[in-house]
Structure formats: structure tokens, C-alpha cells
Length: 434
Image 1 (spheres, rainbow, N blue to C red):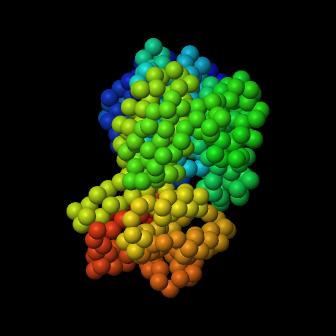
Image 2: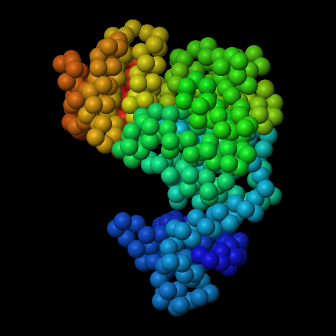
Image 3: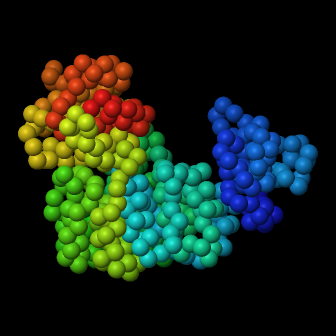
């Protein structure tokens, strides 16, 4: 849209921005976004009837029926993004962007917990981290009400982080790690490096600050063009940290020498905790408040949750997502947990979005599992057939219902259990059987 000011005026009169007519409106500015199987303009009248104050549609004829309530835009998505970018220019506050192959949502939640000890923070809710979610988060930031913003940025192809950076214009950025996620969209690991590195390249162009995880050897190189770099968690870094224990919960020593026991499990979460501590220290959150925030954070949404069941099982529920890198980290961490290896059960589901690499990556996963000390291995999904081929003792079920039936007949008792798979597998529903 050539002139965003009239739409911005309507935005300022609205209570919030909405893209879902099924949600309560109550004075919202509704964007009638199109989907692969629907036309957004068809839902605009219902949104207005439900209480939306204004609606943005790509139907000039509909917009002309009530110009006082409709705004015409050739592409409502572009209008949403341009409105968010315009709003960003009205904001004078630090904006921290967080991306990475694994752990970005957990890191975002931890950073929010820490920074909220000192600032009024607005941050990405849930997983609204794409080309729609980032604009919605930006438009939820209120001048004078919020002092700092945290924007999670997800991507499954090159150029997406660059687009999100143009919208959010972050002043600070953090890449959790580089791993094998969304191989299909990125076109391989090198594509992932280039795609995630778009955040640091943007910061280099605008004179921003990069938080650099030196445990991932590729990140210092990607951050080299950024003049202002804050490093963690190595002993010679800006904010060092030390992993003291990975199980049952992660315990770490912070840069000031304090030991903190978190309520999150798995050594792979140590860099996420260290990142939050480094960001907090940089923004001058008192060390005692950083430690209290990290110790008080309780994971949810199937991310590294420690669940104790009625059957006396201790379940590590990490079923929100999975890719070759996060699977390997979770398995190695689970294998090192104290306890009898014979009493350890791993339940793994298919890894999605691996494209032509899928069979090879599942085969590699099977080889990894075979070499680790687990008593029972349950593999679920058609792609896991390649993993199961390595060892006849591994149980393979083509579908989740088949696996559920087996678990009902063979309920585990007094076991440690890891449950991990891609979001589409929905493995968290198996926990009720454990």
C-alpha cells in the first residue's frame, strides 16, 4: 500500500489486530487473509458482526459497500506486514530477535522470564514466529507501555529471516544454534547456515548487537561481521557459564559464581539457560534476579517437560518438534541420565520436513539408537522403518494407534521414558498410557 497512514489511523482506534474470525473481536482491526483453500473476504462480514471495528479485504466491491468499516488492500497479508513495519518505526525500544534450529522457543521463554524481572516486556506468544505471527507481535507492542520486545523468528527456507528482520528491525539478535532442521526447505545444512545467518547479517548492516553461543563453532564465524558481539557460555567469553548437572534437572553455574538448579531437563538446554543469563546480564538485570528467573521457569507445551506419572514413570516429554540434531541431543542426554539402562524406554516418532534426506537421516538415527544403552526402543511412523532396520529388538509401529495398542498391553512401570517426535506425530497423547 502506497499510503499506510489511513490504515494506521484505524489500527490506533482498534483494540487489537485479528486474523481469525472465530476468535472474539471486541473492537479489533480484522485482516481477511487468504489461505490455500479459502478466501479471507468471505469471513470479513462475520468478523464485523462479531464486534470487529474494521476489516481489511482484497475485494474492492465489498469494501465499497461500507467504506467506514472496510479498507481495501490488494493483498491483506502485505498490508498487515507493512502496517507492522510502519508501527515498528514509531517504537523507540530495544528489539531482540531470536532464531535458531533448536531451542528458540524455550530460549525466548527463558529470556522473557529474566528480562521481565526489570523491564515491561512484550514477546512472541506461543509459536507466532512466521511472516504472519511476527507482524502480529509487533502490532501488540504499545509505546509507553512496553520497554523491550522479544521477537521469535522461525524459518523453513532462505530469505525468510531476512524478510522478518526488515519488518521487525531488531537492534539485538541471538541464534541458538545451527542444526539439521527443515532440510527440505533450506536445501541442506549449508542452506540452513545461510538462512539463519541472515539475522547476524542484518545486525551487521544496522550496527546492532549479536549474542553468540560459542559452543556452536559456526556461530562465531557468522557473527564476525557484527561489530558489537556478546559471547557465552565459554570460560573466556563475555558471560561464562558451567554445566554442573544435566539430570534430573539442569544445574549450572552462572557468570557470577552462583549455582542455579532449573526445572528443565537435558544438557541440550544448558546453552538456552546460559543465553538467557547472558542477555539478562547485558541488560543489567541483577544476577540474583537472573538466577531466580531461571530457577522459577517451568517448561510447558511438550518442550523438555519432566512428567511423573501414576505408574511411577519419569517421562521426559519433548514432543513439540524433532529433527536430526535435536533427536541426537535428546538421546545422548537421556542416555547419560542416572539410572539402570535396562529401565530406560525411548519412544520416537517420525522426523518431518527432511525431503530427500529423510531415509538417510532416519537410518542414521537408528544407528545412533542402536549404540546407546536403552532397555526398550519404540519407533513410530512409516519413516522410522529405516531406523528400525538396524536392530530387530527395536519395536516399530507404522502408526500411533498401533503403538498405543501395544502400550496398553505392555504398560511400563517404574521406568524413565523419553518421548520425542515431530509436532505432526502428536506423541504427547501417549503420555496418558505411561
